[in-house]
Amino acid sequence: MKENSFKLIHTADLHLGATTTLKVHGPNIDEIRRKDFHNNFAKIVDEALKENVDLFLICGDVFHKSDPSPKDFVEFSEQIGRLTEAGIKIIIIAGNHDRPRVKGGQNPIRGLVEAKHPSLYYIQSTINEPIIIESKKASIGIVPIPYIDPRVVKYINEDYDKILKEKINSILENPKMNNVDYKILMAHLIVLGAKYKNIFYWLQDEPKIKLSDLMEEKFDYIALGHIHTPQSISKKVYYSGSIEKVSFLEENENKSFILASFNDKGVEVELKSLPCRPMKTLEFTISSNFNPTETIIEAIEKSNIENGTLLRIMVKLDQMAWYNININKIEQMLIQKIKVAGYEFNKNLIEYNKGLRSLQIEGKPLRDQILDFIQKMNIDEKIKNRMKKLAEEIMDEVNFS
Image 1: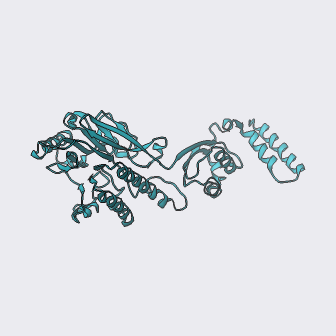
Image 2 (image 1 turned 90 degrees about the horizontal axis):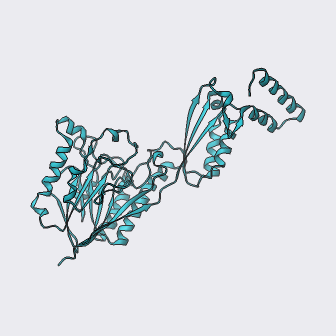
C-alpha cells in the first residue's frame, strides 16, 4: 500500500544561454553571465538530489533561445543526467522562448526524448492525455500546458480562455487520471492579478488568465512559469520565478525555486533562495565643468560597489560635460579598481541653457567647482591666482553663481 507522499522541485524560466539581456560591457562578460545561469540551475539540481525528490518540474523557457549553443545544451544535458541517474522524473513544458522560430523546427531537448532518454518528458505542443508518474509512494497525474501563442489563437478567431479551459478539462477527464493520488497542472502563462515587471515588452499585451479558468479546485498543485517574480497566487498556485536576473528592473528582487512536499495532510511549499550576481544602479546629475570624469569616478568610489557587480551608471549632463568625459578612464577604474563584472553607461543630455547655473553635484555650486579645479592645477601659484581672479571677474560679469 502506498503512503501517498512524494516531493518535487518546481522551477521555470531558466533562460540558459542568456548573455545579452543586459547591455553591459566588461572582459569576458558573455561567459560570466552564461555561467551565472548554469551555476544556479546546478544548485537547483543539487537540492533535488539532497532532498531525494521524486519529480523535477520545469515550467518553460529552458533556454533563452530555441536554438541554444552546443555548449549550453551539453551543460544542460549533464544536469539532466544527474537527475535521471538518481531516478528522478523530469517533466518539461515549452515556454515562449523554447518554441522553434521556423515552421517544422525542433528544440534540441526533443532530441533527448527521441533518444529514449530515461525519465524525461518534454511537451512542446499541447497533448490530449496526462503524464502519469508512479513514484515509490504515490501516483501523480500531470496536466501539461506548454505556452500557447496568443497570436495563433487570435488568427483562428478563438477565445484564449476558452481554448485553455477546454484543453485542461479534456486532459482531466482522461480515464488515466481516475486513479491517481495527486493531480498537478503545469503551465506557462500569466494569471490575472500576478505581479510582474515589464522585462519583456510583449508581456503587457499577453492574455491574463482568470484563476477559475485553471480549475484550481481540481488540482493539488499548480506549477506556473512565464513570470520572473516568484509569488504565490493562492495556496495551490505558484510561480517559482526565474533563476537569475536578466534586467536591472530586477535589481532588488530575490530569485528562487520551490520545494514542495505532498502527503495525506496536504502540501508543504518552501521557497528556496538562489544566489544571484549583484546589480546596482547609480544616478548622477553633472553640471558643466572642466573635469566630469574625476567627478564621476569620485562618486562611484564612494558608493561601496561589491566586487563582481553588474553596474548601471545613469548620468544627466549637458553636451559640454559629455564632450569632456573620458569613458576609457572610467572603464579602467571600474574593471581594475572596483572590479565590477560589467557596466552599462547611460547618458541623458540636459539642454545647456536650461537651469545650468543652479545645477550642483553633492551640493557644491558650479562656481566653486571651477575655482576648485583651478586650485588643483599643477602650475605656478602666481599664475593660478591670476586664473582664479580672472575666472571670478568673468563669472561676476555674467552674473554666474
